View (cartoon, rainbow, N blue to C red):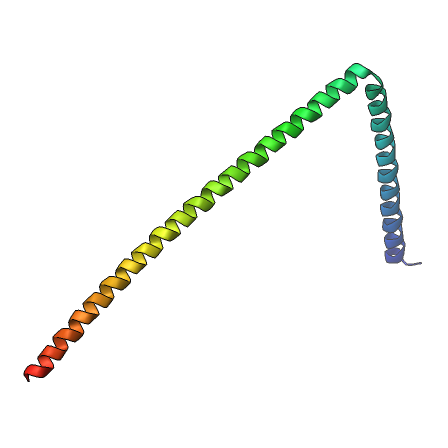
Length: 115
């Protein structure tokens, strides 16, 4: 076996060992957390504390969502208002241009008749 081939094989073996070690470590930590959670939740007082914290977190999340919905609605209303204002301005410019064009055509017709 060549040195390069041996080196690649050693690297693969080392990588495999690291992955196995990580999986075993994860399983041990997960089991520890599960056992600790079971012990903590075994006591009614602790269950009530956890329930209160989770309820508070849920209520806070709902509050954030409602605030975000209100902000989105406010921005939507603001954009619609600006859009409506823009439409009015465009309509005014359009009417002004039409009026100016009518006067120009009228003046051109008068000038053509006098010649």
